[in-house]
Length: 281
Image (cartoon, rainbow, N blue to C red; front, top):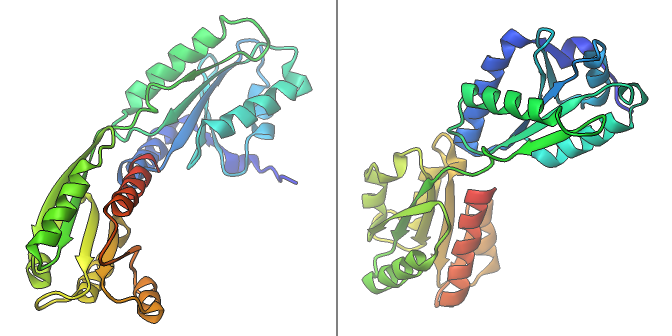
């Protein structure tokens, strides 16, 4: 059973910009989705109390002055949870006597601005109040569209034929709104000494286990010791089929294994799956 604590759940409106920018930073860096709900009731001064009763413990209600919509911040959640909230609101007996307009904005685009969100929310909640019913609502999906993203891909193998084949297969993968920057390295040490992998981009690393100078595991250890190492998705290529060696590699940070000789169609499907997960979450 949910326990309510209004001091924790309701914050002053002046704190909304700060928490909005914090959430946007997570969206930009980690692609975390969040939802903002605008609620307005010209006839009900008790609406804030009702909202506190219906939001989750993880939600934050920002208390705006009379005449302006109150705002609910649902961190790390999509608009589906807002649907559940609206359903609870509609089933609440105390809201049936009042008109309560609701607008829902799911944010996936890390480039959204505070001014843009407030403008969209205010406009859509006022539009909702023009609709029939006690609790009309509008979903604005303007900011649900993901921004264009660049993913870097490193292919590390001493065999130029292998790197050429892999590069062609990666180039065939097409994900809308996703650009790929591909670079080939024939030596593990040369890869580690480059600044190519040290950018803020999400990074796909396709590395052979046996390389001149630095081998695949040494490359892996270097990446996993870096801050924000989760931005690297590492495919380890190998001719070895020992389960013990594969388990060891997985335990040390490998994300996917590719056994040589590999099936090009299967490999392309693996890359597509990972890129889709990177982009769509």
